[in-house]
Length: 578
Image 1 (cartoon, helix red, strand yellow):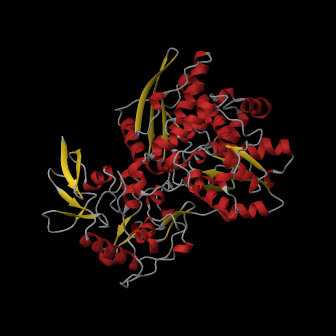
Image 2 (image 1 turned 135 degrees about the vertical axis):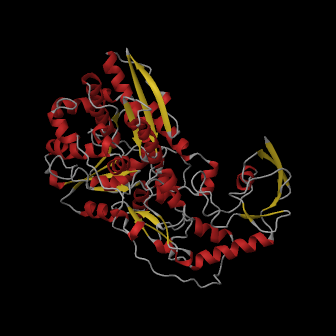
Image 3 (image 1 turned 120 degrees about the vertical axis):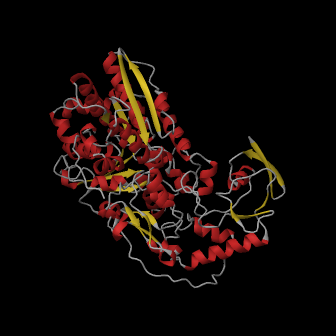
């Protein structure tokens, strides 16, 4: 049923249940917001989105107020503007306003709002207590001094990810967002997913910055420094330089990395093909030999840590295959070191990832098959963008370059790891060919594509029916595993990604403001670019990758064999919860 109303004397018709904010956006009328984040935080707490409704005594928060027939709304009266400005000044009075040195400078919703509303002076003096910065986590840094109590991070951690390690503590003027019992994030069951960072409108949450570690390695003449880039990075990096969401910048990214001085610029997609060879073989072995089912993917470190804390009874179901960037590091410090005649201790592996949890993963003691850490440093897409800017490189003007051989040769199956359902589809492409003994041409498994939180399908491969499920976001992972635990659902293969939408919207990706998220489906736009790159690849199945086959023949032997198990597989452990 539709509802007719007027906003600023403009006739608008919207579906029943629409909020005033949504109705205004449908008519291209902008109402400022701060705490609002579509589908995540819609609580009317900040009062920046207030509007005047004819006949109502008080101003109302438009993000939570539903429209009604004949309603007349005004978004820009003097009363509204004055109230917004006072509210904003009160928020700013308690804010650490060191904007020029803040990681969110020029990409801060509070800063933009202050400019838009013409705040040139702050008439109020806040309490401004100093809070200690929590920087003990390898992935996430919390700075309560910049927090504006919008509660976006609380909502995404509690309601979307169901991790619930941060919440509001104390009351009134003493309210602060933090962990239970004043713990540091590092001492909680935090999954390191970083979704709190991309939800934060200001600089109260940020990734642990490792750019200096990488710069120091590049400046060390005794180190052979190589870099690998994950598939999701290439479809988001351009946003940091003003390019449209979903722009593929693979070639420009490679050129920039070469200009920065890396000794080798490689593609994590190549390692993703190794992951499929190992994980696909593991699935086949379990299907044939009565192994533990369902097999669950293990390339998302946020999901793996969540499992260790919350579902330790499923640890045997996890694939023992390392994530692609860790496999890459192990191959760099064994096969590559041997071929190049370099001592593994002198090889420094840098991973550029869309994921803050990869920083935690790189520090796992289990991931050192050569006796050295597989990966020495992890930087996010945002950190890479900062390094490019620090280098004085004009990114948008760069020409395209190719990844270095031999670890720049990848299949389309490796590329689609960046989108939810991609690991599942990549595995099915290879498993289907092996089970049927044919080179199947129908390889687009669209049933596992899309941005829905949970997807299910039964895939017919030859005479076998394989029941599969895909979940993205830890809240959806919880729902899915609880249905398996209860016996309600049965599957042979499950893919889980820690971040909603998969790696394309990982915690290390460019931050998109709330207003833009109302207009653009970021998950869909970035995922579409991933699948476009897949279609353009020479090889689209992991087992067709000639580099992968060569390394198995020369060095690894066979998937899940003795050498590959030592270098490319690992194990996980139960961790305490609250």
